[in-house]
Image 1 (tube, rainbow, N blue to C red):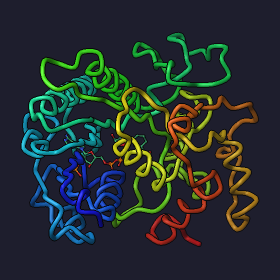
Image 2 (image 1 turned 60 degrees about the vertical axis):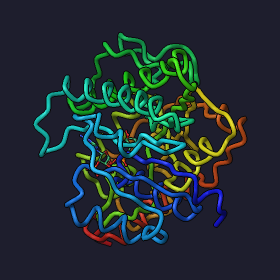
Image 3 (image 1 turned 180 degrees about the vertical axis):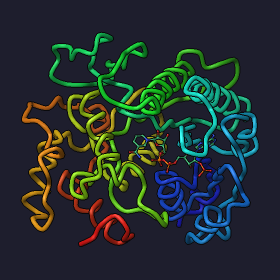
Length: 346
Ligand SMILES: NC(=O)c1ccc[n+]([C@@H]2O[C@H](COP(=O)([O-])OP(=O)(O)OC[C@H]3O[C@@H](n4cnc5c(N)ncnc54)[C@H](OP(=O)(O)O)[C@@H]3O)[C@@H](O)[C@H]2O)c1
């Protein structure tokens, strides 16, 4: 571990989630000092998981903060050089907030965190974990525009109506789109003091292993065809409807991409982040060939169509290399599901 890294403090909001916990682990492994936030420090399973990571005893500090009270992040941000804003408000069974409240909280959260970064005088760069779902090539009438490729210039129209999808998915897309735009606004209007660099990483569906004691939602969505689970398969269908394919990437690559964006001497702007863009049909064909003990029924096979590619060459041109391809992402997601039991019967 380099002395330089240990003295470099970085903040991870949502440090106990799927991406957040893997990112905290990687940052500690690289020798950084990490300020991680979670909503409830009394939650023994979440706090305990983070405290058990190698290096946590001397280089991890936990803070309590909720996006609905965004000023709470100030303490965690103070003294850090880099902030990863990973946390996002979501609609869950235990959440009483309306879609509108979720969208407003996501935007206000980003704004307040960016302002705290500027006020801190210590933060150089804010890296926001965005979603490719904010870069849909659909027009507001729900039609794919003629381009056969999605890049950083695409923005999902927020007045769009979808054929499929639950209200919570719509709220998620709108909140991610508007929160990402809000984050990027700080690149144009850096405030009076030290300029803040903002990077947004618009990530595809993430699969692979986890530190959590359960299968994360995005991992289960990844292998939903194999277990024939309608509820999570709808996540894939929705993604294909919004993006024209299913942009995916591995948990190792997504966290490495975040750290890559931090370790660059200077970097700002929007970057799409996806290693592969299969259609649902192509994913089904891979599973059929490689997991022949499972029967994938017709309703989970997807349609034969030409997928729309998500062009993540802007990040690659900066020097980032993806290490995990389509096969490895799917294989490691299945392995994770099997390791954690419950969803797989064989
Ligand atoms: N997984 C994917 O496929 C994927 C793809 C693209 C982008 N992303 C983005 O990556 C980020 C992490 O997602 P994930 O898959 O790791 O999900 P996750 O495991 O469900 O984690 C969500 C995180 O958000 C935090 N959170 C939820 N509501 C909050 C609130 N009101 N205040 C503060 N924190 C709150 C949770 O904190 P607690 O642990 O304290 O409850 C948790 O750490 C999100 O921004 C998501 O949009 C994920």
